[in-house]
Length: 461
Image (cartoon, rainbow, N blue to C red; front, side):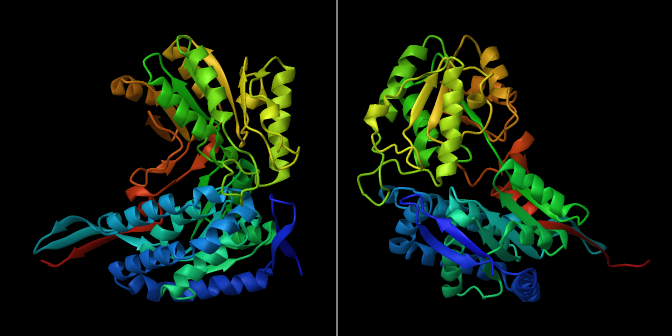
C-alpha cells in the first residue's frame, strides 16, 4: 500500500503519513459525494450558508491544535497564529454575498411570460489545495462551492497532509453531512486518473505551472471545468512620490513573510532612481531584523522553508545571479541558523537584471531583487517582462496614475499602496502562466455554478 508522507522542515522527521487511496476506493468517495449532492442542493441556501459558517467557527476553536501542526508541517512560526484572519474574512464575505450572487437574473415576469436565468450547482467539486497557505487557499473554493449546493472532495498537498482532515473534521462536527465534504489522500497518478475518468464536474487547483499542465492534460476531452492558480513573479513599483517608509514596510513583508512562500508575494521591485538608494538601505535593515529559527519558538519570526528542496532552488537562483554580477546585501553572519537546508536566511539582491533566472523564474523564498528605473515606461516594460501575472503593487500618491498604469500591466490584480493581500470582494485571478478562472467575489460563485435558462410561456394564443 502506497504511503504519503509529510517530512517536517523543523527537524527533517516524518511528521505524518497516510495511506493513499486506490483508484476504486477513490471512486467510491466520489460516488458518495454525487449521491449526496442533490439532497444538499435542495436544502435552503441560508441553511447551507450557516452550516459552512459553523464549520469555519469550529475550526477556530481548534487553534491550539491547528497552529502548532502548521509549524510542524510547513514551518510557519506559531508567533503568527495560523491563518484565521484571512480564513474568517473570506468565509464571512462569501456568506454575506451568497444570496445576491446566486439570485436569478429575471428578464421578464408578466402574465404572459416568465424568463430568467438561474444558477445551478455543478455537482461534485474537486479541490486540490497547496501547502503554503493551506487553510486560506482551500476555503476560497470550499466555502462558496458548498454554499452554492455542490459537494466537495478535498485533496491536500503532502506537505500539509493533516489540513484536509482538520477541515473536514471541523465541518462535520458543525453539522455538514459526511458525504457532502470529504477529504482524500491520493497520489498524482490516481488524481490524474480520476479527472481523466470525468469523475468531477469542476476542479480547482492551486499549485505549480507544471501541476496545472498535468491537470489540463488529465481533463482533456472530459469537458470538466477547471480553475487554475499557478506560478507568480509579482512585481512592486515604487514611484518618486511614494511613501518610502510604508513602501519598504509592506513590500519587504510581502517579499519575506511565510519565508517568501506566497503565491502573491513580492519577488521583484522596481524603484524610481530618486528613491532607490534610500529604499535599498531601509529594505536591507528591515529584513535583517528577522529572527530565523524553530517555528515552535514564540520568538521566531522567520521559520524554515517548507522543504529543503525548495530552499535549494532559492540558493541556486541567488548563486546564479551573483555569478552574473548581482550583489547580495544581507550579511549572512546575522543568520547563523541558516543550515544549508530548510532554514534559509532572507536576502536582498541589487545589480540584478532580467537575464538572471532570479528575476524571471518563480523564487518562492525570502529573497527579492531590486532594480533602479527612470520612468513609468521603463517600469511597465519590466513588470510585463514575465510569463506570470497574478498581482502588481504600485506605490504612489496618485490614484489616477496607478489606475492608468494598472490598465497596461498584464496581471490579475493591481494594488496601490498595498501588496500580498487577497480581497474577498474582488475576483482572485491570474493571466498568462499564472492560470485561468477566478475565485471569491460574485464571479467566484458564477464559476462554481452553471447558468440554466427558464423560458415559461403562460399563454398559447
